Amino acid sequence: MEKIILEKLNKLIIAIQKHGLMYLIERTWHECKLFGCMVQVIIFSAFPTITYLLVLDKRGRYLPKKKERINKTDNPLDDWIIISDGGFRKLEITIVMRTRVEIEDYSNATQIIAINAANLKDKTAKDLDPTDYGGERVLWEPKYKVTYMSCDSKFLFPAMAKNKPIIFVELVKSNNGRWVSEFNRVEIEKKIREYCLNHPESYHIQLSYAGYHAAASSGGSGLICTIAISKLTQKVTIHGWDCYMDSPLAKKSYWGVINALIKTPIKAQFKSFECCTAQWLYATRLQKSNNIRIHGYIKDVVNYPKIVRKLEKLYYNNV
Image (cartoon, rainbow, N blue to C red):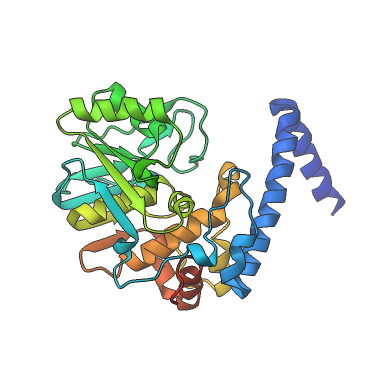
């Protein structure tokens, strides 16, 4: 035991020497947040409808209160509203999530949309931290044609710099009868909208959530883009929807699956639970549609009905 403690202490000292005191502070803060996420999971397992009471994100609450929840319908896409389709309508689309873009060949697909396909220059797709806003990003450029899609400028700017076709999904909310952006990035979004207007194969889509507006952003750009495409396309195939998971959920115990709700990168930890619950809920519901096929670790969630029912109680009133 003493040997193990000394080894860990030595590694910590080396890390502090290499990265500075901020590493220790960030690591300590991460452990505190991880503990908070574990408490969230315990509350979710016992009393899912009050999970929103534990707020871990300093920027705001991502889970709706009871009065802010919406009613569940047969079609999960009813939870979302297309405010403007930007002229985008397709018969068939293949979506590739960022985590898989460098792993498989999708050249046989009809039309390929790559979501968030700009990786950090000094990291591989496998160990990419999806919430690291610093650092240069490198665009994934296969030999076949790809359209780049995101809600986030840091993934679209690398494509715009190379004059590639993009799809910008702007999440909007109603404000005094006007539709305004969910995110306060006016100048950045203006540049992207202007690019879409001047590029014949680029589109600007506006999407809104029918319920508590902050909950819409909790699932991240991947979920928002997938919802937008699914509403505007007759047939959708999604590859690599893993939601931070690095192994299948099949044959795992209840608590083994629950643990995957908080197994995310350090910098994503502040809202890992909210992000994963939103993605798990809609992935589970979307894959029941005849025109949507999902390939990825997230598709196994449907095999755990007890967890699915709890997920629904986070966002819906009539369940």
